[in-house]
Image 1 (cartoon, rainbow, N blue to C red):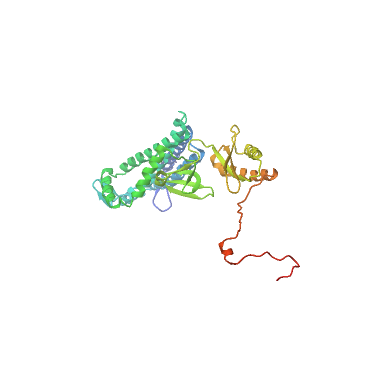
Image 2: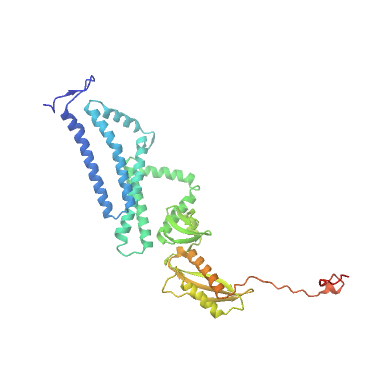
Length: 389
C-alpha cells in the first residue's frame, strides 16, 4: 500500500513510509498541540473563576505561548530525527549528562548546571503562584466576609509570602537540594556576614510588622522624612512612595517602623484642610467670618454634609490671625483644596474691601544723653528758596 511502502529520500539511504511519518511525527505533534490548547483553556477558566485581572491573564497567556513556541520546534526536530534514524535522543542524553555533572557537593546536595537552570523556573513559578494566591484570597474570600481593605491587604500579603516560601522549599527539594545541609551552610556563613546583613534583617522583620500592624497601606497619603506622597507598593524589604512631584522614593521598612509617620488617610480618607490668613485690626470680624465661610462652602473638594468652621486664633503684631477649616473627601487632594481656598480668599477679601496686613514697624527717635553732651544733632532740611547758612 502507499501508506506503508517506504520511500527513499534522495541518495541519503533513508527510507520512510507515509504511515511512519503520520504515526511518529504528525500525530504526536497534533497531540502536543491539543494538550497546549486544553492547558490554555483550563488556565483561562481558573483565572476567570479567581477573578484575576485582565492584565495578569494576558501576561500568563503570553508566557504559555512563549513556552509552547520554544518547545514545539524542539519536539518537531526530535520526532523527525527519530523517524529518519538519527540518534538525536542519545545526543540530547549525552548533553544532559554533561550538564548534570555536579560541580559542588555537600552531603547529599549536588549542584550542577541543570540544577542552576531549574532554579529559574522554580523562582518564577513560586512568585507567580504567590501573586495568584494573594489575588484569589483577597477577592474571592476576604472581600466576601466583609473585611476592610487594610485588613484584606495585610492578610493577603502574609498569605503571599507563605505560599512563596512553601513553593520555593518544595521546588528546591525536587531539584535535589538538601535544605538541612543548606541550612547548616547558611548558618556557618551567617556568622561571618551577619553583621553586614543587620540592615537587611531589620528591614525584613520591619516589613512583617508593617503587614501585621498596618500603620500604612497601599494608596495611603503619608508624610515621612519631610516627603509627602502616596504609598505605591509595600515590599518585604522596602516601601515605594510616589511624591507630589512624581518622584519615586524607596524607603527602608525599618525607617517606617522606628520613626513617626504622618498618615493622612490611616482609617478615614477624608480630612480637614485649614487655611490661615491675617486681617487688619480695622476689619469687621463678623464680615470676615462670613466671607471665609462662603469660600469654604464653595470649595469643590469639600464634603457636602459637613459644615466649615471659622476660628479667630490670635491677636498678633500686624493683625488678627483667622483660620477656616474645610472637610474634603480625599486626603490626596489636600494641596489642591488648600490652593483653591487661598486664591478664593484673596479674591473675596479684595472684593469686600478686607485688608490683609503686612508686617510693619514704627520707629520713634528721641533725644538721649549723647545729644545733651554735645553730640551731633539732626537739623531739618531748608525749605525751597530759603538761603542756606
